[in-house]
Amino acid sequence: MDTANDFRILVAEDAVSRLEGIVRNRRLSLPVNWGKAVEIIRELRSRVLRIKYMYLPAHQLAHVPEIAEIRKLSVELARLVLDKDLIRRFRPDPLVVAEARYAIRVLYGLSARILLGDENNPLYAIDIEGVEVVSIHKHPRADKLYITKAEGLLPYTIITNISDLKRGEVRAAAMLPPAVLMGEISEAMYCSGPIDPSYKGKRPPESLLYRDEVAAKIYGLVRRAQR
Image (cartoon, rainbow, N blue to C red):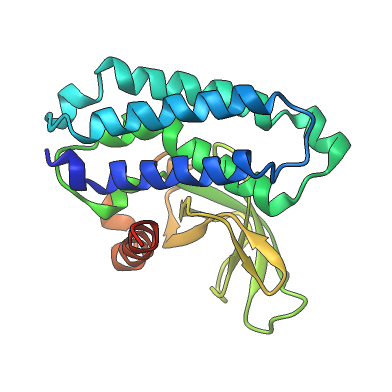
């Protein structure tokens, strides 16, 4: 496995860089131990760099100590900077909160995505899960966009131009970096038609996904990260 060029590792590196920018610049206006947060991110960077040059098969790489440490450190960082009570009290920028959640999730789920196999598949770089559409509203500032609420492992806000989306159906959603679309934050992208409800909260098979659309997003993400 060419770990130095694997999309999973490259996107994990980008996730660490995002967290570095958030923490070093205090973009989350919360009273937390920022020195501790910087220390955790430094450790995350070190672990990601180590696995980048291990060149091990996926089934071995997923079980090296560094992978377990990345998972543990990401949980520790989430508890520190994404404390629900602090977020509710101090109301930091919701886009920065969403970006921190995305980046921590990328790192937390790295081991599971490595176990998907040795193929350097761009779709392996991020979490993809079945989500249930629970509400749909017209975007107040864009005629062809809809603001939807969806539920999978977590609740999500997803902005889409899919006009035939229906409440109650389950679709795959790619967990991409949050984006602001006409003033509203979108945390993911629908990437399938309606799928079996049994996939809610689970990664659907690739045969059900809009593969090219997701791959294009990952290519763009990696290109931006490498500039």
